[in-house]
Image (cartoon, rainbow, N blue to C red; front, side, top):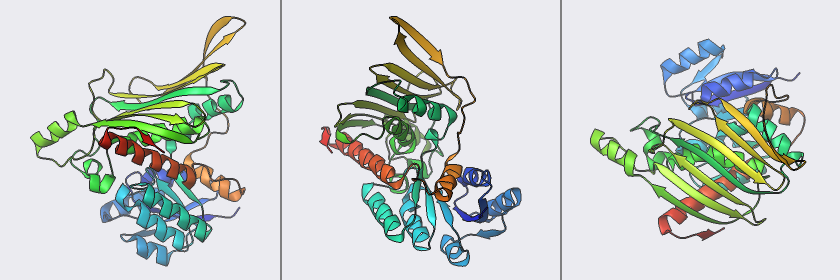
Length: 345
């Protein structure tokens, strides 16, 4: 089997990318890049990676790579993705795809021009429960899906408080672009990415901003966002994302789909990152509830899935086109929130 030479840019979440690629027999991570030399040495030793760099451009020039993962603060996604594509690499870019839709359009256009794949790491669709939900939807068990609600809220969970996550110039936004992007993609994927018609959104920042002010920390993004998206096929999607809200749960994640034949509900357990799925339907005039029992067959992580798509010449999962759709929706939600008006897509 051909081995794919893979490089990773950024070792925060980048470690999970290394593990994901190394889980596939064709995945060989040969180079990593990070500004932190101590972290580089530690990660290289742990995962047996031969080459380390503090400069991504140097890595791209020195190594003949097939695939590059871009796992950096959002501000750098576009430029690093463009550089990797032009160096002849397929790219797996962390979510969100970019700072805004204009950047995402440039990334996608460059991927097409270079004849390379561009995939976005919407990791929550690459989970056993999500795979099972997709199978039910594709089998027609829900019938016509006319409504969905997708949520990721935290009681108090501002990542790296005072760091780049809460700085608009580096992140592009707050929990909407950080957490909401995951749940938004999951719902859109389950709904087969219907075409948006209009959006109305609101953002708020009463809690995190006050905490930051007391601590003398930088914070200039929202801490709560909500939106309603209407699609051209008539369906509606509600979205909620929060780093700070006065709710019971420390961490609340759920995605709910309503169809004319059945309903699905994915939810996290006890504030953890473990999930369950329930399926609701009417049969013979009676209402039934059922729960998914693992294991779910053929469930692979994002990195494994990208390698499989390349090897078998299949469509790119979580494609750049879908990433662009998500970015356009995020831009529109922020615009609606700023203007206080619904926005036609």
